[in-house]
Amino acid sequence: MSTLSANETLLLQQSVKIENGVYKVPKKIQTLALELRRKYCPFSEKKEGFCKAIWDGIVCWPSVKANKTIELACPEYIDGFRVDGNASKTCDENGEWKIYPSLNFSHWTNYSLCTVEKGLCEKKIFVSEY
Image (cartoon, rainbow, N blue to C red; front, side, top):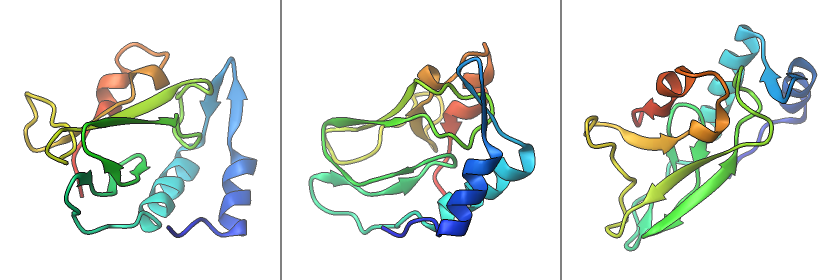
């Protein structure tokens, strides 16, 4: 998997502040971070018994075995996300990312433990695959 360059990482680190346990990220930096993270997300081929790596619009999720849930720390480049939370994504028994029932076109990522602001979760939780 490709990673951010040293300059890209430094820019993001210098721009992100923490206030009351929540990341504070300027809009311009958040947009840049999302573009960079997407750029470095490896698009893998589907393998039997695995969900493929996927960019959900916020985080690049690695390939994972079927019937498993993976957790990652809440991304530091999203304004308003908690410092101490985790996001999760579930790979079903068929090796497909869980689909939210009312949004059958979208892969569902649970960012509810990343948010402190009521309603923010709904804005960021339903993200379709690119």
